[in-house]
Amino acid sequence: MGSKTVVMNPKSEAALEGSHHKPHVSLGIQSDIAFSEAARRLCGRDLCSIADLTVEEMAAVMELAHAVKNHPEDFRHALDARQMVLFFEKASLRTRLTFEAAINTLGGNAIFVDQTQSPLGERESLPDMAHNIERWMSIIVLRTYSHDTITEMAASSRVPVINALSDLEHPCQAIADFFTLEERFGSAQGLRFTYIGDGNNVCHSLMLTAAQLGVHCTVASPKGFAPKPDIIYKAIEIAEATGGSITLTQDPIKAVTGADAIYTDVCTSMGFEHEAARRAPIFKPYQVNEALMAHAQPHAVFMHCLPAHRNAEVTDQVLDGGQSIVFDQAENRMHAQKALLLMLLGGAKRISNSRDRGIQARKRT
Image (tube, rainbow, N blue to C red):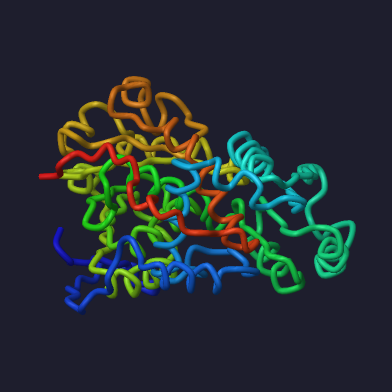
């Protein structure tokens, strides 16, 4: 793969190829000063998109996630008396429970508001909601359909807003996923990461996170289902600075060959259920099965954000097999979100021995 990048032109959708050889920034564990500066900058900020984070801030969030997982006792009262409200327009298992567990174990409290029957902004304008909520709450977590709901709430609120999923991005998922890969491989930098399937919200956040961490990211999607061009270009811009790369292809076998990690998601995301019948035959060649996994590295892992449609985008044999780390990903949602809450609410601190990440590293060939 090297640093070759294949992108789709947003006007013609013709494949363009180019190589990028710019010097890349230093990644990995930061100095005490750099960590403290990143924490200072993130305090009070919103997380609407992965692109809201700098490369240095992402590195600090990752380091803090390792610290809170390895040393939970050091953060038990870090967010005492802080109040978090969750407004969810979409159903949730992992996102809701991991956010609630995260703030509860940091000393704070969570309040859940079910918006599945009443979209945000319908009963009361988003600015009016924000100006009420900021008087009572320390942070707002939104799981919505429209990404504009996230950005409008963030623009109106004096307290931080976190995107817990929108139709454009799923940043918390991507941070937890690459945190999981760091645990597995020791470092994400230089990792060969392949996403197979719909270029959806999860794919967008994975691409941006991969770029920030210096990962060689390949996305294989059917024609007409590639990620959004503006996300592609932003990810390439970031990757040029970190030594990573972004590659797009329509060939799933080419995409997974030599990969360290293979990731897939459902072919039809929430809100697009009416397209399920049309999409099924289009995505059938992109199913992650044992034959496809055989083209990856012997040590390769399988990843999925869940819930999975078994024997649709992935077979039972792969999902339940020895290479699957899907439940590690699910567990790590809580630890990654703890780190985000600590950063945005001013509770972040560097643990001196957090440099030891408890790595179960495997040598990559």
